[in-house]
Image (cartoon, rainbow, N blue to C red; front, side, top):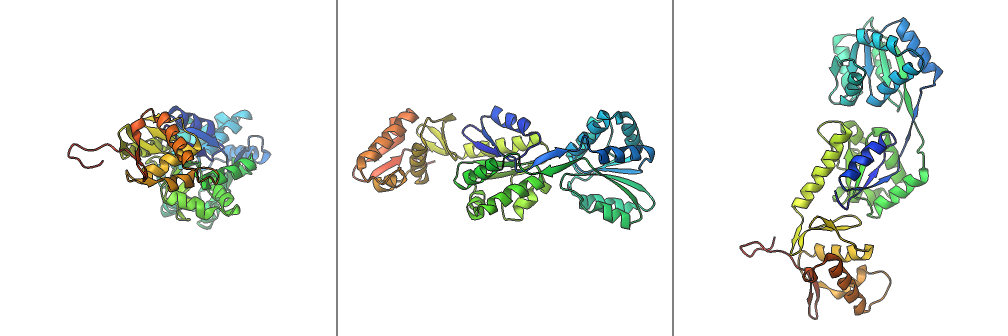
Length: 371
């Protein structure tokens, strides 16, 4: 991912995600669209946990991995962890997706059933089909609040205990979110990573608040910027707006990173074949033969223009159009091209076509066809 700029919109586990991306060569910008507010000291959570220990549930639904972990940690902080784990161990444990299952396993327990779609609708469908009448069902809610399970199970005759372990709060740095939106619209971002549906929705609302929806959606649509979502639930706010998403087969941060790496490895495999090696133009940098070129933003735009021509001649006037300022001096073009050749370390990368302009020198296949 050399040369890629990835925007991380998550608050929770953002350091872990950023470190994994940076190890693979990406530059990371961090602009959490929401903050996660834990309820470790929330009296209502501890009171609900004590009540659950005293009146054990038949079924426990874990809706999020981070929420289930935080619940165990909160219980531990108040000396209730052993009692809570004993109660959970005797109940039927239902996980709303792989991340919740992972948190259950990390607590030394085993999920009895997992909703692979990561949706509350699948949880409701399965439990209702089995019957919950007369049962005590405990639900650990995610930070977005109630998801309808309480009402559905109560109508089916269950006694429901709800536990909200964390909630979503405002972004820790609203200015950073606004700046990230402008950067995405301006073409400074290669990929945006989303790890929760509320976070994705909040970032998109920030896009819309600045009236940049069309510009941002267009960049996602043409592939110049990638929307990477950790799973189908996270992807829904994006896809509802017509934004295509890159998703891993499994809902894990590591799998999300691997999906991004695989995406850019594929782009490398179909990179423009030049005499100096494969060329890929990122949002803000150019990568030639797996090396990031030391180019200014202007140099990147000149190279992008030449690359877009696919080896055809680009007139000097068009090169002048991407240079800063209003000068129409042909000497400015000569200077820009000279700097581009110097940065590439190959003077033959950009050919001068007398009285016409410049072209990128592409490699040729053995049969004489241009790659």
